[in-house]
Length: 109
Image 1: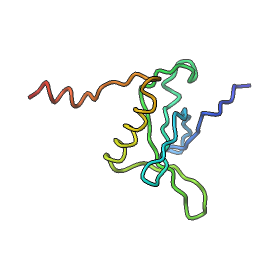
Image 2: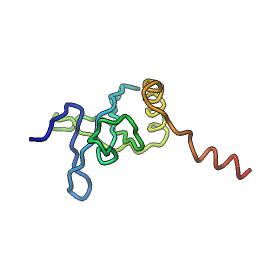
Image 3: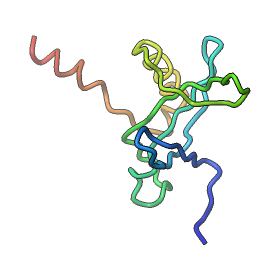
Image 4: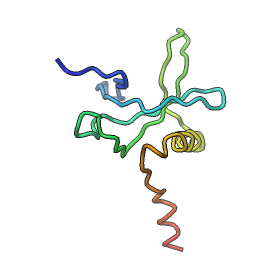
C-alpha cells in the first residue's frame, strides 16, 4: 500500500488526466485565497526533497453549487504578488532562482 500524504492534491488537467501536486502554502490576499502547489513529478523521492523547481499558483473560488474550485489566475500582476508573498514566507526554507528575464535583459542593454 502506498503512503498517503496530507499535503498531496490530485487535480485533473485539461486532457482529463490526473496530476499530483504537493501543497506548499495557502495564501490569503485581497479578499482571495490562493494555493501554491508543486508538481510531484519533479521529485525523484516522491516529494520528500525540498528542492522545488516549478510551482503552480491557483485561486480558490466558490462555485454556484457552493463547492470550492481551483482556477487558473489570468493576471500576471496577481500571480507575481502572490508569488512574492509566498517567497517572503518561505525564503528560509527554499532557494529561489533570480528572475532570469531581468538578468538577460540587463546583459543585452
